[in-house]
Length: 164
Image 1 (tube, rainbow, N blue to C red):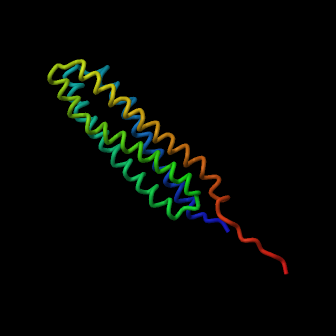
Image 2: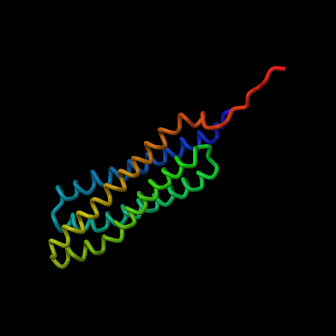
Image 3: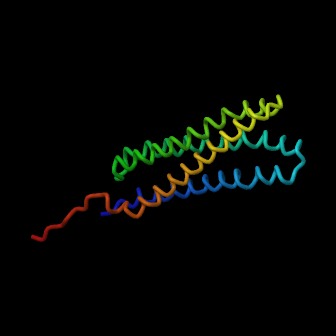
């Protein structure tokens, strides 16, 4: 007997994670560069100062959600504990990188306001690295879950019927 309910729940989780990842990639790769290249400097700065905190909050809330679901699911899943622990660690790295980036934004804005260009560039570069780490972790989590889904049916012990 196969436990299709768990496989369907995992497929739903994968779909939600893929949509989350797509939204994050769209925001980082489309909106910000488009604002910088098409808008005047003062308008792009105004837009991005409102956009980046919202982006990071969305990333943190989604990361917390996916980490919690992964943590709770690891107790009930037939996926081996070591594999679910790795997935949980990846989700935690994703969440933590976006959380640290969220707390860097006020310092980045302050450095820009004070015309401290070296500090601004250093903090901005650090935030870009944190976002990249968060996106790569989200992608790794997605790949890890897609990898394990077909094997979902092989983790459960099967009942063998003995002919009498």
